Length: 114
View (spheres, rainbow, N blue to C red):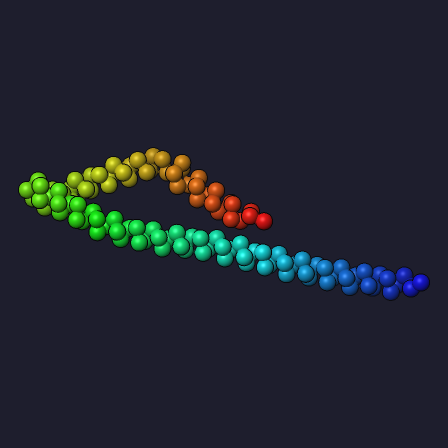
């Protein structure tokens, strides 16, 4: 039988190794989670920028077309601006349901995945 002091030393050494391994695992999981969240947000923002550029070009073309129908080109921009104003008001009124809740749920799902 080995001495109790040696058993305690071995136990303390293995406990230290276990805690170091646990800390390393926690760091790696944290890095993985943060990387996944950031990459999801970055790709979403990239797609949002592309969609925004398409909408700007489409809006200019539509405003010029409506302006031509109404006789003055700036009338079309007023019409499109008014439509965007109404759409912005609707988005503002439903921002919690359409924007805040889905984004919060996405982040929570990503962070608590494991």
